[in-house]
Amino acid sequence: MDIGNIKKHSDLNFEVAQAKKNALEKLRSRQLMAYNERLFTADANTINIVSTLKQHNKDFYMLDVNDNPCHIKDPNDFLNKLIERNQETLNSYQQLHQDLAKKRK
Amino acid sequence: MTTGVLMYCFDTPELNYHRLAERCVEQIRKYLKLEITIVTNLETFKKFKPLGMINYKLVENSTTNTRPYRGKSVAWYNKERALAYEHSPYDTTILMDCDYFVFSSTLLELANTEFDMMLHDRVHDLTGKNMILGKDESTLPLVWATVTLFKKTANTKAIFAMINHVQEYYPHYRNLYRIRYINYRNDYAFAIALHQLNLGNRIPTPMTMLADSVDVIDSDGDGIVFKHGDNVMFTSGQDVHVMDKEWCNG
Image (cartoon, rainbow over all chains, first blue to last red; front, top):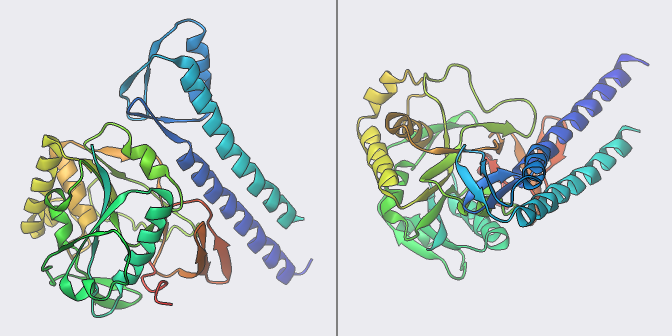
């Protein structure tokens, strides 16, 4: 491979890596979710902790992204909303990921 | 409880900010569906195309500030923003620059939470070249006033009183915080006020941005296409602060 082609290859990789970073920022931003006037991220950590705590208590307290406590009175409702938002953002990311994979081939 | 968007828009001899505001209004209507108030001057107001239901507040703006833009020094009418607390008719206000374009409902999620004032303290440069932030610009924890959500509370009233004070004595505060940038900039005034009062929440995700050297070459209701050097990229469903002030000129 001559240096011209290597440069093209490198440019394409930069472009793909940046598109991925931008899509991840979009995903994180779209995962922000208001609940009972508090702000949460619908990511794996939040889903896991809600899922775990709800097995032990009917209601419980959690810290939001700004470290403010939130009383979770209906864990099922909260968990459903978190999962819905999480999957919505991941579906959108997955589509872009597939497009990028095609671009690389 | 009312929630709405407040924008400041003053055309300058060099730049047609009203064109950006017109586009910004379209995006707000599509994704946020909130009432909008535009603070402007009579000269700019006359240039707006009919935008439907908008609250206009006409003021006489200060015209003493300048900024660098694409290698030139241009007029920058940014001092009225310090009066946003008085100008806003809403309980919860999304104070937004007219070059910030919403392509999602993320700001609604933020507005539906409890806070006094919330703004970005980090940026994400979409080009990956990290052209936005300089090094050692000040000794201050920087925030970006581009999008500022605030509620009408005693704390917020104090913050805006402090911002007005900082604006009045800006050379002193600039010196105190070792700010390199010479001209008055709202980002610093807001950051100083929040630092002095130990108040304010941060938006947890960075503000997506394009530097003024990046050209926006196309857009639709869902995103924009931009060009930097030989690279052409696009955004979709992602709010973005565009520093190219001429892309809406047609």
